[in-house]
Image (cartoon, rainbow over the protein chains, first blue to last red):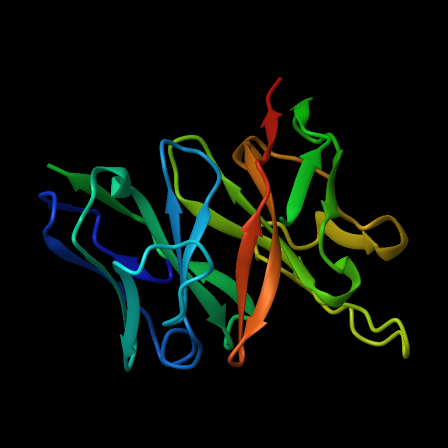
Length: 109
Length: 127
């Protein structure tokens, strides 16, 4: 069982807005920023969000936010190439380890 | 562009050892913490270990962290002169079978984030 809780699967149509969530605790999500990682067809993870900041080259349809112990990744204007597994991750100050969510499989219909 | 190239993976019997390497380039390796993350077949990402940067001036830093599942069996280390990160894996078990990713850790707004990832090294533990 993962320390961070994510939806198992989410789907949306092209152009739609979808939001993925990541639920943690006060020692991880509630305390630190959350990174979001995209993995397409079991390739290497690609960083799409650092807290609420997009790395260079990531389209502006991706946005990140956090409220308390829940972090969210929103994709506005879903594209076929966004179909992937998405993982959230942050540090846990109680466990002194990095924790990951179980991943959300995003399907673009 | 930041590059991370893992090597050293392979097939090993249970109880055996393996040493992974991660060659870093196109950034100042000395100044960054680094981490290992693995992914078992068909499973999600799992944290393995991380190592903070070591000050070239004071020699301080270099703290290491491990997931409970590998503590006492795996050792993370780095050679800043060779821009290389290592993961020594001993007493390997079948459940250690996974693709092992090396990643750079970026400190941004008070939080550490893996930002660049390698392509992974496959470790298979089987008799």
